[in-house]
Amino acid sequence: MPTMAADLARVELELAASASSDDPYLTEIASHLISAGGKRVRPGFCIAAAATSPNDPSFGAGASGAHIDIVRAAVSVELVHLGSLYHDDVMDDAIIRRNVESVNAKWGNLKAILAGDFLLARASEIASSLGVEVAGLLASTIARLCEGQVLELRYTYDTFRSEADYLSSIDGKTAALLATACRIGGIVAELPDAQIDALTTFGSAYGMAFQIVDDVLDLVATPEELGKPSGHDMLEGVYTLPVLRTLQSDSGPELRPLLTDSMSDADLATAVALVKEAGWIHGAIDVARSYANDAVSAIGSLPESMGVVGLQAATAHLVDSVESLAAR
Image (cartoon, rainbow, N blue to C red; front, side, top):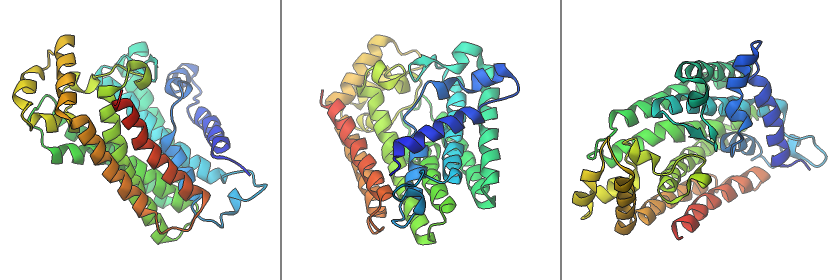
């Protein structure tokens, strides 16, 4: 019986092919983060969502794995994610991504932007081959990503950023694409509408938990574990849930003066310590777990299948892993 690992290996081959251009120089730039690897959460969820039917013949004994259209759907979603990372690193002036030099640091901002555009174009090209519904959904999701990112930029270095604005931002910049990954997997696999809707709800709730966990990791993980510098969000003026709740607590008057656009390494260390001491690292993890529980509930009524089991396991691992790091 084929495995998720085997299907993700097929995704890697298709990703490499999709980043190829007649210009070897553009191919090198567009392939940079693909070669660096990654967790491939979004394509994994697309494939798992398609496998939530217990009668899916493409996952039967002796089958060769997910249908090629499902693999290509997974690739289109991951290309959107990769293109957004190219653009994010330009906006953040990042120098490291996935433990390698960022595209903008290696080739400059202009080439990074164009290569990101190239990946988004490739994603749209693949989506259009999968039907009007998939193409339209991916296009609207790219718009949601932009809206979420703009909302985040609007409140950079704003220590009075509301929690509602934070949640709206991550709903757009992260949860939307995970919801779309699940939905596209269901659409391409021709699952029933009610099942596709349940998978979409799962992806959205998981995406909210995923981003909150990622924001906690920025405060508790090492640069090696993150694949980029730790504490980056506060340095860039992006105040996430643990920070916002600490600002609203008795520690707020001590934390707020540290959060400036000229934050020193010593200020950052003090700020991180204040957030940890205030208890909002674990408080944010509790919020993430609530979203994770919502995600599991959304697919709780679906028939047992390899896909459902995989999605449930991924959700449990998400919060458990950050709790172990926060406990160090």
